[in-house]
Image (cartoon, rainbow, N blue to C red; front, side, top):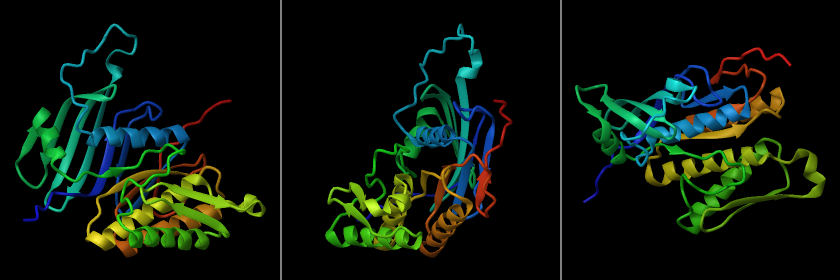
Length: 281
């Protein structure tokens, strides 16, 4: 007997009232299969990924967390966040209030019914789902979190896709490796040093390849949220990367939310730039 676990297919909106480097109120609504949240600074993108990870975690709810109101920050120690998402059965709105990484309140509304879950009931309901895959933004880690190579065929399929896509972006003579346990690596010759791909972009391509093979193999892939640096790319390179990943997501019917960092606003369809604030130096 096969149990069809409810799977989060799309993240349709993210809102918070200020979190760490993203200290300002933030709201984002997803419109396409690939949506890019371009943050003004690298650290903002990292914190956004972290907060979404906390939202779907199920081991970080503690109503007994002690809040020290004697600190100068007072009530601003609390962060309220909400994420709207779609599964293969329902539409949901998840709201949590965090003190540090632990939520002290949790609420899960089923938007197409009258069901509402609070506290531990909300967390248990989320735990029963196949939740979104949140890829950590640590640039030192290139491991398979979306799909580990279960056999040589899937491993080679992922390698072929990354090789094809990296060549389409102009990265030639790059040797890409993937171990049977899912660790990625790449090598470039010294003569290609000026045109080498950024590790962050290779991580992005590897994530897309894993999701593509997973969708082709099983017919399903949960929503993915990840990070890629673009602050050191020129406009032509940014356009090429966005066009490529948009095409992949459309053709393979993948749902990606991608956080990036570019000091300049990116004027491309599917890109939502975070608010720019004047900084006096």
